[in-house]
Structures are given as structure tokens and as C-alpha cells.
Image (tube, rainbow, N blue to C red; front, top):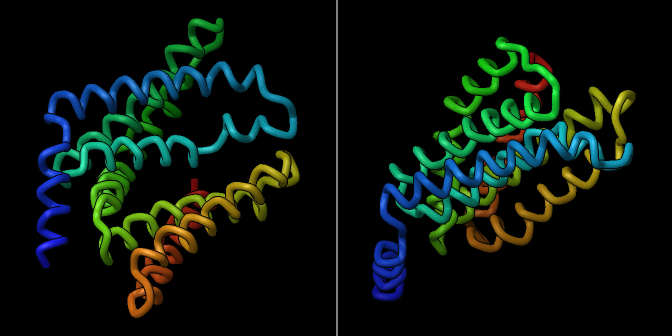
Length: 209
């Protein structure tokens, strides 16, 4: 108990202020979004799916949320990160001489509002060295597994299957090496169930989009 209290105290002491945490989310989102737009012209056929995948954006939002540590700030930061990823992508597309569909921009901004809170909660929980940490890492691992399965089974004929296989394996590795370890051993089934639920939601969302 004393060890857990000390860990919580350290997290509270090292967590950034609300303004700093939000600024990190905005900056990271704009940069990653812009890089995504440019990467679509840089990457080879074997890796171009990296710039057409929501997984990297979700990972960035998760990392920013974990940096913010506290749940309310982490949720806001994750939403800002995802929204700014789309805004950065749209702005970079225009700079490159392209155009954006208003409906597509709105779709991803709505997705940011919906996906931001669970990713923010997962990131905040991932700072803990107990069941919450397992659930946090399990959730983000499940996101990658779900998108990897979607890509492999749905769009593999028009994209390179190797990217989706790698994303799937990365998601599994996160669940096995990070999530299950933090919830080990009695809570492992719960952690795996959360990962499976997250994977199912992402897979279904991809099929419906």
C-alpha cells in the first residue's frame, strides 16, 4: 500500500500542468497529421499503409494521454491530439496542392471526439502498475489488433498485407508483454477480455465506416 501511495504521489508530482499537457497534444497532433500527409508521397508500396492507418494516430494519442497522467487532462489531451492530427493532415494536404473533402474532415473530427475519451482513459491508467495499467495497455493493444485484423481481412487486396500483419503483431505484443504483465496472473483474463473488446469495436467500426 505504501509503495502504491508513493507511486501515485510521484505521478501527481511529475504530471504536467493542464495547459502544458494540452499544448503537447495540439503540437503532437499537428506534426503527426502533417507528416502523415507527406508520408503518403514518400513511402513505398509496402509501407504506404502506415500513412493510411488510424493506428499510429491512436498510439500518439495514447502516449500523450499517458504523459498527462491524470484522467480528466488525459482525456482532453487525447481528443485534442486526434483532432489536431486530422487538422494537421488537412492543412498539409492543401500545402501539397491537394484538397480535402469536408465530409471526410468532419468524419475524423467526430471520430476524435468518440475515440479520444477511451484512449485518454487508457493512457492515464497505463501510468499505474496494477490492474489499471493492464487494462490501459490492453485497450490500446486491442485497438491495433482490431485495425490489423480489419486491414488484413477487408482491404488487403488493395493494400500491402504485411503492414496489417505487423500492426496486428505489435498489438498482440503490447497485450502480452505490457498489459498481461501488469495484470498478472489473476487479472490476465480481464485484461485479455478488454483487449478483445477493443479489437472488436475497432474492427466493427472499420467495416461500418
